[in-house]
Length: 248
Image (cartoon, rainbow, N blue to C red; front, side, top):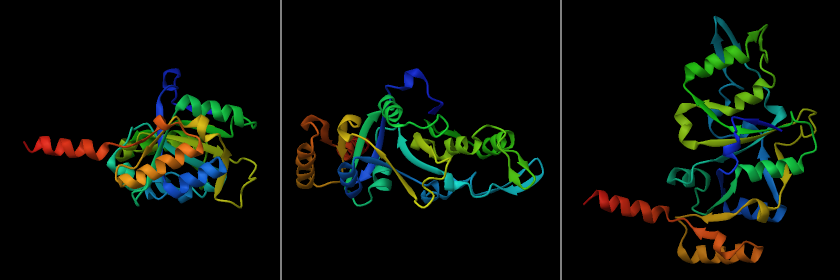
């Protein structure tokens, strides 16, 4: 596995991911993380390198369709925000899981038997558009109608670059490179996990009614999570207090 912009001190860093309730329950039943093809990402700016035209040093071209080799999953280092809850659990029924970067890497090391160029994990580097173009020009130069990978696995590394307008997302990305095209007929890839080992806390949606929260809390305890590890977000309570204080 290749680690991108990850240092030893980062391994204890908590990382988070929000699931809508139906997806989370499905994950518990299947005991797997689901990676999807980047072409399924909702944000059109995600495809800035894989599906965009550029004029670099006077040369115009299109990066071409290289989505078919890759599967991905995104995490965040940001504790939580109302914007993240709204984006990933629009029906007010979200579950935010917590683990550490080190635990996720350890899981992958124990699970993966393929070569080191198949799996990549790293921090997203947020850049202004001029530096994104500069990076492309230096590492994926356009030659004879295609973007050449001057940087080994440059197209994969480009998945760890994003416009700085999105820096609030504070992302960690996990990328699977299907070099042998073994999963060419699917848009998802399942990675087996033990959710009770990987996740050390479940934070339930702050917009969830109290009675519904109690039902789900009991459900997750019955699944095998410790009672103290299943809590409800206090985000809205905190934000309401701040709003009241600001009006004094």
